[in-house]
Amino acid sequence: MASTNIKILVCVKEVPQPEAPIGIDPSAGWVQIERSTSYRINRFDGFAVEEALLIKEAFPDTTVDFITVGPDRSAMILKRALGMGGDQGIHIVTDGEGYLSPFVTAHWIALYARGKTYDLILTGVMSEDYMQGQVGPTIAEFLSLPCATATIFERLSPGEGEVYVAREIEGGFRDTLVLRLPVVLTVQSGINRPRYPSLSNMLRAKRQQMKTIAAKSLKQTDPRQGVIGIAYPSKLRSGQVLIGTQEEKARELLKILSEKSLVQ
Amino acid sequence: MAQSIIIIAEHFEGELRPVTYELVGFALELQKFCPAKIKMLILGDDVAGLAQDAATHTGLDVVAVIVPALTTYNLEVYKGILSERLPDLDPVYICMAHTTQGADLAPPLAVRIKAACITGVVQVSGEKDRVSFARDMYAGKVVATFESTSERRILTLQPGSLPSPVFDHPAPVAVETWTATYLAKQSMSRGIKPPKETNAALTEAEVVVSAGKGVGKKENLQIIDNLSRLWPGSAVGGSRPVCDSGWLEYRQQVGTTGATVAPKLYVACGISGASQHIAGMRGSGFIVAINRDSGAAIFNVADVCVVEDLITFIPCLIEEHRKQSI
Ligand SMILES: Cc1cc2nc3c(=O)[nH]c(=O)nc-3n(C[C@H](O)[C@H](O)[C@H](O)COP(=O)(O)OP(=O)(O)OC[C@H]3O[C@@H](n4cnc5c(N)ncnc54)[C@H](O)[C@@H]3O)c2cc1C
Image (cartoon, rainbow over the protein chains, first blue to last red):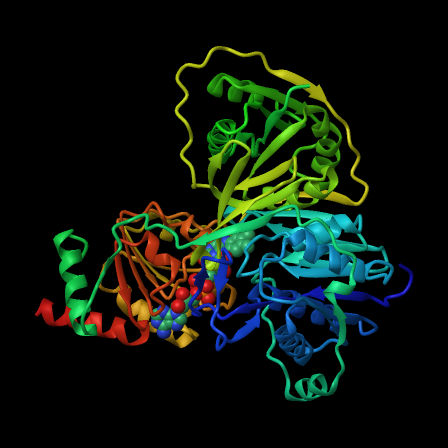
């Protein structure tokens, strides 16, 4: 890469807010989420968005695009990302709410990204809902790019065409490497402090046209795996649920703890 | 060529990670549905001794894949060598740990060798020809059952989900040695750096009171501090997002990428119970969870469940304790 014209694509995904009840639809073998549930940007993706915007601040000729694969509703999180900064939102619109294999999602994003000369593709380390952590590294392999997951630090050297990366591994150790651009990085939480959307950016995002692509118009691929059923997890411990008013619960808890000599 | 079930061993600083033995248990489970031979591969520059240890301990076929100069895990090298060697072994299953290594390697390797890839598996079930894999979704609120019609499957096993099998003086087996070279062109390892801070205060405390994102804002950590004062010598810990936000220090983080604690009492306040957090505290003697969402996964590992808003409940608990102490 000769100039510092850096092109970044950030993959973002909507997730239901963490307290949303997750129901089960036995006939569909899939989860059922109430219509009234509010969705937000996957927390890990927020760090990826921020990292891209920090790069844009350091290298002003940078363009930052956001892409999401999801139902109509997902357009909202593209606006949210654009509210933080960045240039363009791309929405691959899917039908329905069923499970989407990471091969399919990654395949579509790779189809979009192919030939567009992105230097950096960023994703969150995983999504809070599916928790598979696969879309980022799978995109990398579809595009034959090097990849580092769980990135907790990155320093881009566009002149040298490389990026220095620290991956956070078990127990707080850091695995460091130098990757040749272009690369895919999945971003671990804590790499930065994501900014809040600004009013001016939100207004701009509101006016801005998203690029929309119907998923069904894209080449389909073998999902390789699917979900056949959903259940609630079994309890691993007794899980005694306290009942009554707050005061009653507090007294009951203290009683249990003192019986076990766990409180004075 | 007979089919195989492959285990990719994980090692760190000259020792096999304990999860490698859990992978053996996992492979044995899979073998109940698929009569294939289990083989463990250990990749690295100096792994002959590790391979011998693993073979002696488990009685399984173990291959030391000697890769000169490969002192730490490197995706490009692992992927390069495995995608070349694995097809010859006709693997039905390739088992790795759901660690930062397995999660890095499994998806791209799956693309290369045209396998399915199911990450974070906690359980195997089914019958012949119809095997399914359970894994957490939605921060552990539900468990999904996955199936794959692909002929090859890469599975990453959530550490701590299966016990390591007990090996009863297995018959001695010979270790195979392969030599492989692969020159990384796109990603050069620059070494592993140890954590800067120690977390001894947390790992040695008899009581750990932990704050999750549910505390809402930094100021509310005062409530958690106040609660911890019920136990002299207790420590305050937290989930990853709380440390990410700078509300607590990194050395206070509990979970796979933080400390593993096993105090007599663990009090989880406003923590959802994602597997990465649970992995760091499930060994605690007694677990109390306070969360206003009755569906939170933390309640599945708790001895006592308090479905309440921590902002009002904890002061109430402290007040009740004060009343009882006078
Ligand atoms: C590779 C990797 C490593 C990771 N390592 C770790 C790790 O070491 N440690 C770790 O903790 N996480 C780790 N994580 C992150 C983990 O997946 C979860 O995202 C994280 O544990 C969630 O933290 P939380 O429960 O505090 O937040 P959330 O999931 O947001 O949950 C907040 C909870 O608070 C409850 N709540 C909200 N308000 C209140 C209130 N007023 N009163 C009572 N309850 C309330 C909600 O119901 C919810 O259950 C890791 C992730 C990855 C991908």
